[in-house]
Image (cartoon, rainbow, N blue to C red; front, side, top):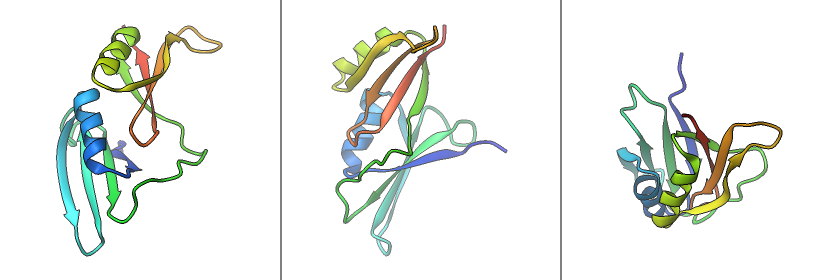
Length: 127
């Protein structure tokens, strides 16, 4: 077994795709409209779904925002240099909500950015 994808609901699919592709450097792997269900699915990631875990962006056509609740934590991405990744994300229009630095009660360097819908994305420095 392996994890295939994580699904998140987004209020504006084009805005979310722009963030995940232009700010975080992912690719749109596939996208399909479901007119009878009034929703669209878009899968984004860093490599083919057969080899990598990806993110499924679900857009329900009649919903422009969601309450995120307190059960979901974050998506984590490995980066070579968390501070440099924050700067690059900021320059691409992304929002850094926690600058790079050691995690609380530990030494691993992490940072957090936020997507357009408010989902947190953790950057974990892996040198």
